[in-house]
Amino acid sequence: MERRFLHSVKQQRLFLGGETVLTALSGGPDSVALLGLLRAVAGAFGLRLRAAHLDHGIRSEAAKDREFVEELCGLWGVPLDVERIDVPRMARQRRQGIEEAARDLRRSYLLRVADEKGCDLIALGHHLDDQAETVLHRLLRGSGPTGLAAMRPRSGRFIRPLLPFSRWQILDYLQKKSIVFVEDVSNRDCRYTRNRIRHQLLPLLREFNPVIEEQLGRLAEFFAADEDYWGGEIDRLSPQVGASVAGGWSIHLPRLRELPVAVQRRLLRGFLERLRGTRPGLSWRQFQALEKILDSSTPHAEVALPGCWGGRDYDRLWLFEKRPDFPEPFSLPLHGPGELLLPGAGRLAASLTEDCRGEDRWSVEFDADLLPFPLTVRSYRDGDRFQPEGGKGRKKIKELFIDLKIPFHQRRRVPLVATGEILWVAGLRRSALYPVGPKTSRVLRLTFAPGELWPNLSL
Image 1 (cartoon, rainbow, N blue to C red):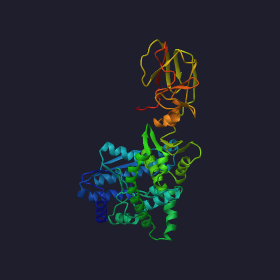
Image 2 (cartoon, helix red, strand yellow):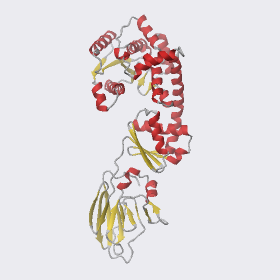
Image 3 (cartoon, rainbow, N blue to C red):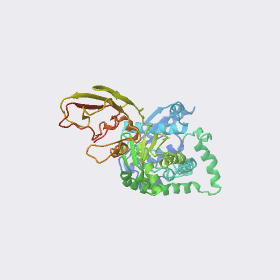
Image 4 (cartoon, rainbow, N blue to C red):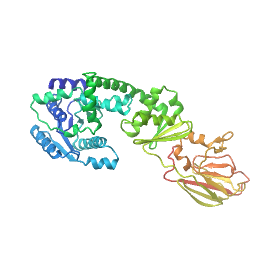
C-alpha cells in the first residue's frame, strides 16, 4: 500500500518537495490512514507534517475522539491543532443543513490553521468510495458536467492523495499495520443523504455492477478532463462576452447567444464561479431559472440564486453577490437659484451669473433668458430621449446608458434636468438646447455633486 501510495502521489505530482502539509484528522480510518501514509513518504519528498482536528459539536463521543487524535499525534510526533465549533447552532444561524454547514466550517477552519501555521497544502482523506458517493449525490441533485467532475486530486491548496484507493484497501492497510482508529457512529445515520447513498443506494447498484465505485470514479475522471479543457476555453471567451463591474459582472446577451448552448452554459457557470469564489454548486433547476430570464419575452427579469443574484435588462445580464438596491424614482421642481437634495443621487445647485465660467463633467451652463421656468429635476423613465450636443438628431437615453455601461439598477440615480425637453443628463451629457451665446445676458449654471451610491465611471 505504501509503495502504491508513493507511486500515486508521484504520478499526480501532488508534491514538489519540501512542503508543510496539514492533514485533516478526524480519528476515523480514512484520515488516520492518510496521516500514516504521509509519514511513510515524507522522507521521499522532504515533507513537514501537521494535523488539525475539528470537533463539530454534534457527537457525544467527541471528547474521546479528541483524546485519541492527541495520543496518536503524540505517538507519531506530529504537531496537532484542535478546535470545537457548534455546527448545529451555526447551521441554524446560516439557514443551512448540518452537512453543508459542517463542510463549510471545516474548510474555513483548515484554511485558517494552514495560514496560521504556514502550511502549503491541506490533505483530506477522501477516497474512491467517497468519490462514487459524491457523483451519485450530485447526480441526484440535478448536477451537470461540472458537478459530475466531482472531487479533484488537487483543488487549490487542498489535496486528496487517497482518491485512487478504495475503502477496503484503506481498512486492509490499517489492519496489516495494526493501526487503530475510531468509528464515527454518525456515519450510519441514514437521516443524512450521503449515508443513505452509502448504505442503501450503492449496495443496490452493486447488484447491477459489482465495481460500481470504480466505474463512477472513472466517470468523474472523464468529466474532470473535460472541465480542464473547458477551463482554458472559458478564460479565452469570457472577455468577449462579459466585463467586470463594481460588485459583479455585466454580460452581453447577443454575443452570448451567438455561441452554442453548451458554451453558453459553461460561460455562465464560469462567471458565477468567479463571482462566488467557488464552483457554482447550483442544481439543474436553479441553473434553468437563470437561463429562463435570458430567454424571457420581457426586457427586465431577475432571479435569486444561492449566494448570488441575476438580473436581465434588455440585452444585458447582470450578476451580483446579492440583489442591488434599486433607488426610488424622484421628480422635483427647480424654480430658480438654490440647491436640491436628490434622493439616492446627490445634490444639484443652480445659480445665475452674468458671464460664463466654463463647463466640465459636473457643471453646465444655459441661456437663462430663454429657459422656461420652473425646470424639473427627475429620475430616468423608459422612453426618455434628448438631443445631445454635437450629435445629429435625438438619442434614446437608454442607449446613452448602454454606451457608457451604466448598470440598469443604477440608472435612476442619474438626474435628468428638463423643461419639456431634457437639458442635461447630469454628469454624463448635456443637450444642444439653450446654449450660451453672444446675446446672453444671464447664465444659468447647474452643478451636480453625486452621492456615494452614484455609478463610479471612468469617462
